[in-house]
Image 1 (cartoon, rainbow, N blue to C red):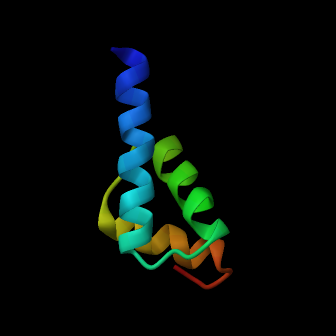
Image 2 (spheres, rainbow, N blue to C red; image 1 turned 90 degrees about the horizontal axis):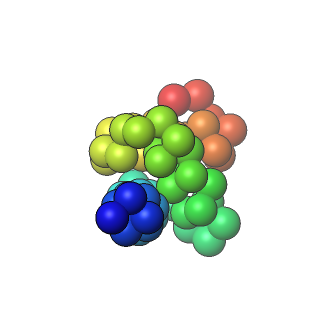
Length: 57
């Protein structure tokens, strides 16, 4: 079940990243950072996306 949970969290993180506006390669970058942080929430995804884009969060 650990592998299933990990896979589900990655999928969920990708979905949240897309909802935050991530495009193309940004999706994987944002999703990875969300999973690493353990904070897979919309507000964190928006901040992370700004960071990935080089904008101040």
